[in-house]
Length: 355
Ligand code: GLY
Image (cartoon, rainbow, N blue to C red; front, side, top):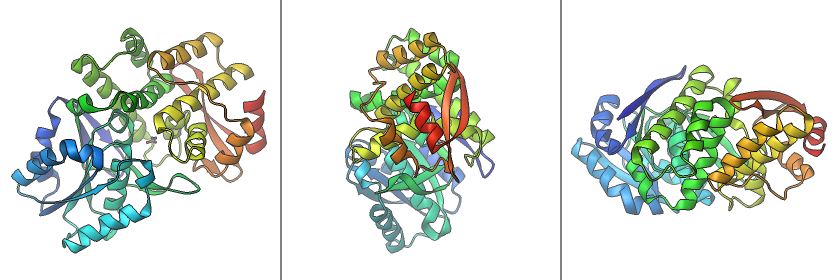
């Protein structure tokens, strides 16, 4: 078992990573949620059929009264109606401020469980139990919670740090290949913006990190350590944390324009590819670095291009959360392992994408 500690300003907590890490759930919950009697396990249909019983029994054995809220799997469920369903379930069951929520699932689930916890009774504790690669390396760590609205992804939410994150890498065995590949979008992002050691390791694994659970555990832990270091420095996304948005400004537009049918990690990979190409064209990134990054995306089955036009990107990006006043912070990589935050006006961003 590996432990990565997150030192966010509002809260410090551990991320436990390992095979059978879920066995720690009961004792962690007892330790971290003193006075809790009840827990709402938030999950979705696919994950619940595989792991809900296991998680429920861990929490029951630890003495908690368990309730569950299971929503239809998919990004389409990431809306206020489902959150209201969670609030109502907790209110009807008589939850108090010492009770807690457990998010069991991928990024959609951990974002929604966190948001329900952040808002119910003005905030109760949440334990995150991510089951997808994307949620393990990114979504469940760092306290970003929320929902989508028709105008954009994650447009409503709160920063709400978990009490602990339990990452059982054995859960990844049942993850469909395409969902695992999607998670690699965020893994490669960490390598590109801040971690050359991770990049080299991924290259060495030649496109397959699933075969060996020890390697997988190590790679997940490297990513969590990367994320933890960024969040510990800038919890509220005012500085360095914005570098984690590499590929996201463009990726979110592609994702939203598809009606949230294209997977997030795939759209991020496309967004990274589009920005990488633009950096090479403007001369801020060497062609050989760009090739190495795009080769890595390909090695892990990820795309690096899309038919979206610069005009469509601009139209969609201008209501992005990364916009401040009339400028948007675009994340560039000017050298492997080194990200730059560049503020651009709409016109500058269009020119950057079009040259
Ligand atoms: N997923 C980007 C962040 O947590 O800031």
